[in-house]
Image 1 (tube, rainbow, N blue to C red):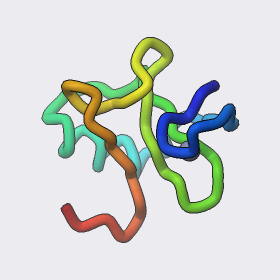
Image 2 (image 1 turned 90 degrees about the vertical axis):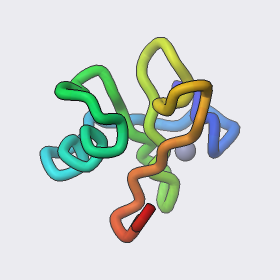
Image 3 (image 1 turned 30 degrees about the horizontal axis):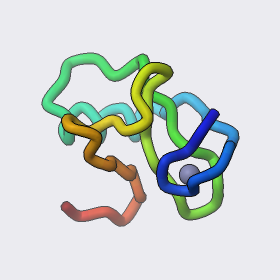
Length: 69
Ligand SMILES: [Zn+2]
């Protein structure tokens, strides 16, 4: 699957429970099961099967573990 941050094809995985909770907070959504995360080291970019960026308007969302924004 194409990663918009890596600008290359990268493996993606489902979010773990902790990442799902943080993405729900970021998106103010009740369910985030359609989202996958780039598995490249240090990337953390989130997308769905339909949209290359999880954020509204194509905004990047990266679930970096130490991300504070
Ligand atoms: Zn990536």
